[in-house]
Length: 159
Image 1 (cartoon, rainbow, N blue to C red):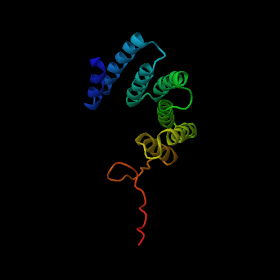
Image 2 (cartoon, rainbow, N blue to C red):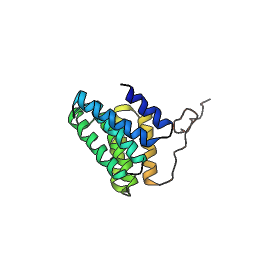
Image 3 (cartoon, rainbow, N blue to C red):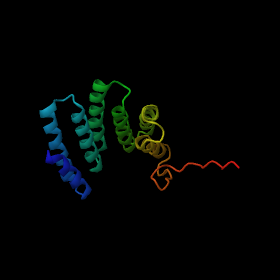
């Protein structure tokens, strides 16, 4: 399945058109191998959505991400880390489409789910916290520590 690694490499090399083409090929292969209702198919839909968004078509990206979310809900129910990832994706595309209230609602649901399932310090939870901040205040960046985590206040040492 070399097409999957080519997709990532092509994206990293700055060729989103080719990356989208490869992501669409990967989606077609996964649909053929696994069918339309499989976690890998949902992941491929999310990948195609991401490259579609990078090329400026957030509306189409949202449609694809909504499809991935639907598949994941069918497979995993409403409380699963994969659901939170899809909620974040759709929130980002809604933000890009100028729908901050809907975007914030989706991102907040993802954040709450990730805090419960993964913990407050998990990288996905922290990434969603940044998305929430960006939706609420465009241009805002969460400060991070050297380890890539948001800075926390240190407790004073007791003597």
